[in-house]
Each structure stands twice: as C-alpha cells, then as structure tokens.
Image (cartoon, rainbow, N blue to C red; front, side):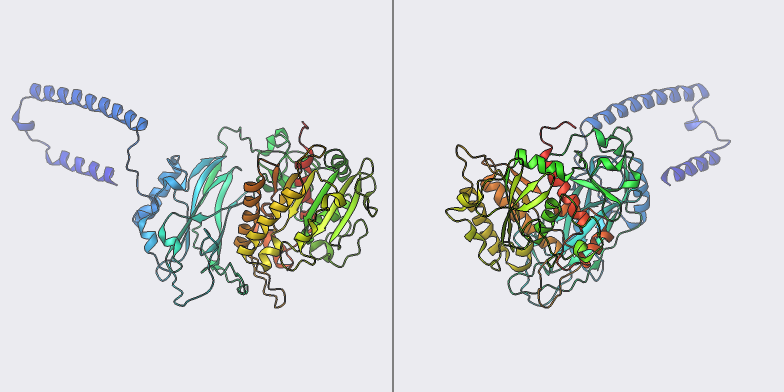
Length: 573
C-alpha cells in the first residue's frame, strides 16, 4: 500500500508542475548535468546497499522481528502469507521469544490456544516449534492435588496430524522457562520442538485433559472425571513439510534400504498397508485397521515365531521375564508361536480380558512359571527342578507380578533369595515390565523407592563372574493411556496419560543410572507404539478396555519390535 501511495503522489506532483520553468530556473544543460550526477550517486548507493545486504547475511542483526503474537490483528494475514513464501529463520522454541502478553491472559478474555510461531514450509527431518497457552483460570479454593516433581499443573494432549497420510506425531510439551508455570492459578505456557519426517501438510489437534494437577491422584485421592477443555486451533494453522530434493531418507520408497532395527524403542509412524510401495508381507503384520508400524531410522522385518525361538535358543537360552497381565498376553503369543488369537481376534479375550482363558502352553496365571520354548512345538511347562533347558530350546521363567505394589502375594522382593540363581538359573536376558499397577495404585514416592530396590536386587542376583554371561536388561514401558478416566468404584485405577509416562521415566532413568555401563540396558517402548496411532483408534482401544490391555494385533506388533531388536544384531538382511 505504501508503494501505491508513493506512486500516486509522484503522479500528482508531475501534473502540478506541467508547463513550469526547469527546476530553480537553470538552463537545460545544467539540468542534464545535475541528472547525470544524481544517476552516479544512485549507482553508488545501490553498490553500497548490496555490500551492506551481503554483510547482513553474514552477520544477521541482533534484533529479530517480533513474533506473530505481538503484531496487530489486521496484519496477521499479510505476515502469514509472507512467512509461507520464505523459509523460516528460526525453527526451535528457544530461538523464538514468548510474547510477554501471553503471561497476562486470563480465561475470561482468551480461551486456551495452540500457537505455531513460524508455521510455514519446512523440509522433511526439520523441526517446528509448537506452543500451547493455557490462560489463568484461578480455582479459588485449596486442594490436595499437586503435580509430581518437575511436572506441569496442566495435562495437555496435542498431536500434529498429516492431512494426506493421517500420520499422527505427538507433541511432547514441556513447561516453558518462566516462574508462572510453577503457580497453579497463573497462566501457563508449554512448548516443544517437533521433528516431522513425512512429507505432508500437518495441523495441530488436541485438548486440555486436566487442569490443577487433577491428572495426578496420589495417595488416597481418587481419579477425577475426564472433562476435556477445548483448545482454540485456527483451521489455517498448518505446517507444510516437503521433500524438495526428492531424496528423503524417510521416504517409503527407501524404507527397504534402511538397516534392520536393533533397538526396541525406535520412533515410527503408522502407515496404511494399502499405500506401501512394496509387499506388506516384508514388514510386521497390520493392526485391526490395516495400518503397519514403520520406524523412521531402521527397518522392521516380519519375524516368524519359529525363527524367534531358534534365535533365543542360540543367543538367550535362559530368560527371566517379569511383568503383569500385559506380559502374560505377550507370552501367550510367544508360547503358541503366534497362534494365540489368530483365529478370533475380535473376541473379548483377544481385545481386552484374557484372565479366565484356559491356557496350557505355560502356567500363565501362576506367580512363577518356567517353560521351555521349542521352535516347532512352542512352549511347554518345564519339569520340576530342571534348571537347564533341553538342547535347541530356550528356558523362559515367567514372573507374574502386580507391578512393585504391596498387592503382590508373596511380596515381589521375596523371589530374590540367596538360592535364586541355583533354583532358576543365571539368565543371559532379563525383561522387566512394571509401572502399570504402580501408576494405578501406588504413590510416586513409594514407586521410586521400590525401583531403586529392584535395580539393586537384579544387579546383585545376576552377578557378572567367570562362567556366566553378562545379563542384558530390557525395560518394558507401561501401556499408553488417554482419552478417559477409570471411574470404576472398585478398582479406582489412577491412570492418566501424563502420570503413566512419568512412572515410565522413573523406571528407565533409575536403571540407566544404576546399571548402564555395567550391563546392556534397552528400552522396549510399547507406549509410543500406541501413542502414535490415530487418535480415534487410541480412544477406541482404551475406552473399550478398562484393564488397558491392547488388542492382540497390537500385542503382535509390540512383540515384533522386541523380536527384531533381540535377533537382528549381526544380520545384514
């Protein structure tokens, strides 16, 4: 508009001087000389401007343009257009100041909203900053709910969802560095740098799950009703992720060229099996919606359980497997060589509860059950008193625990007696799956103490000395939880998405601190597999199963991730 106004002024000036004598009354020749000098001066200015422009690229100015949130409302559309035409100068939240007026917002004037400060076009593998502003909504009364240490008052679920691929990428929000975030009744701002690896146009989706730390019902507090609060998300708030060079290492066209996965926690996404540019039989089987789980940086192959049994006999002939009913469901797949729930995947047993199912391949409901895994016949209960597995088989000792809670009978620590190794053998692998029961029934302080004890007992019970292999440790995360609260009057499980994840972090961090460097510690992150499913499927799974068991199809995919990690090392195809 400024350029247009200037042109109109020039036109007006030209009309008003028509028929007048030359400027200041000079003759024509003098006037031409003046114009020549002006032209030379103009060239000099252009040259100097170019020099300064290059210098400014080499040394950018210290002061940066104000974020979009600081601009007058009527300029937002113009700025949005400009940003989409030019690559963003910043991508990380730490480089993008939070507008000061955000901290003074209240719910009366502004609803909670999502902000992508430089929503624009980025290339695959780059990150974008996502923020959520939760304006103050003072409670006005005292309460006994409080967040865990270094945890937020609000639990906010946000995903970036691809328009074409339907890829769902969770936004791992953290508290911005500001004192307001420590006070329950003030405005809170959360942010995260999210890496996007699939070419698509992404939009934020989500809501506030809980305010006032109601996501964390500690001690005698009961789970609170799930009453999500809407987030304001404009339809125009999008991130365009492109593969301009056509050489993205994350492209599905290149998936089969990736190295095999050797870690059970690789980030990935769910892709429709129908859209794969290769035979879907080359990757683990799909879920109940025909979606396959594909990591970004490595390749999962479809492992037959017969091959897995052979691998265990060769690499891990003795395994101690600690866990709850989720572990039981995984072992039902393993001990039947994948046949469990293959015939009736939509039955209640396969979609949720299997605690009354008759099962003979191993003592699935006993507190401790050794069984031998044969590549042909599957699992069979081990003979009493036998410590060593038969030839070409692996011995799996399954421990059925209710987490590390006081509900265990006998107490879980009682298994680690002085003759523990003599009775059950020295394993080359120990798989530990707790946190589900602990999140539901124990305080975080109690759980932290029990995890310390567990790490110490495992370290002491599996000594590293001559004649014994060094026991590798695999930590299984708890199951993902979202979209509801367990309001059952009897169970009153204190699950919440954020609480579950903090308990997982406590388990993983403790074992890493105490055993990493002494033993190989891997994380089998089954939670992220479910967390990255499209929201409607997550909601469907959790709300239909109060026990928070995943369907047998998801059990299969969780197992495939573990089997690849344990057996791919040293393989090239």
